[in-house]
Structures are given as C-alpha cells and as structure tokens.
Image 1 (cartoon, one colour):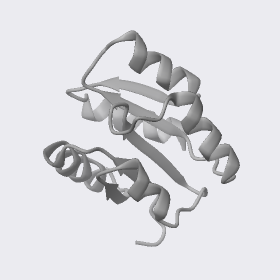
Image 2: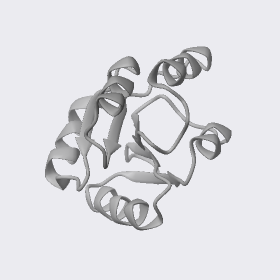
Image 3: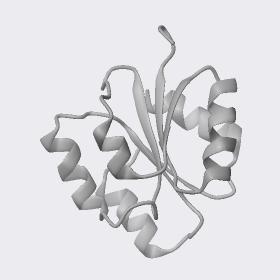
Length: 120
C-alpha cells in the first residue's frame, strides 16, 4: 500500500510471523514477511520509510556479516532484532549490526511499535 511505511519482517516461526504481521498491520504499516534472511535478500526493498525486523536466530549470519551485507547493497534500513534467547550472542549480534532496537520474545507490542516509530 502506498503512503504507509514498510516493515520487512524476517522470522522463521510461522506463528510468530503471523502474530507480528497482524500487530504491524494494525499499527498502520505495510508488512512484507519472510521466513528466511535469504528470501528477504532476494526481494526488492526500499530504504525510504522502511524498517527491518528480524529474529536473531533466523540466520547463521553474525551481526557483523549482516551489517556488511547492508553496507554493500547500500541499504540504510534501521534494524530491530527479536530474540527468544536473551543471551550474550544475541545481544552482541544486535550491537554489531548497529540495531535500532532489541526485543526479547514474547514481544511487548506497544513498545515495539514505539521503537519502529523512533527508528523511522
């Protein structure tokens, strides 16, 4: 849909993806959801008025590798990470990718929507 910011959502858990998509739709966003980071990379994205939300465990990429991929493709999307694991590896991955946010699952919906607003 035109005029609505776009959220690119990457989560390999179908139920989490479905629930987050509903939350983001209700929050007024256009949502493109993907089950893998590779599928997301194949999709033509926009850097303008958009944000990437992804699960830290959806890919074998480290945060540093993720940041390099974005730099190479000239993507300036803010990234918000989600994780069911509140461990050092997940936090380090988010930090290395210069994440705009990091949320532990289950997600606080209003807080996530606020973080998206801030990131955009």
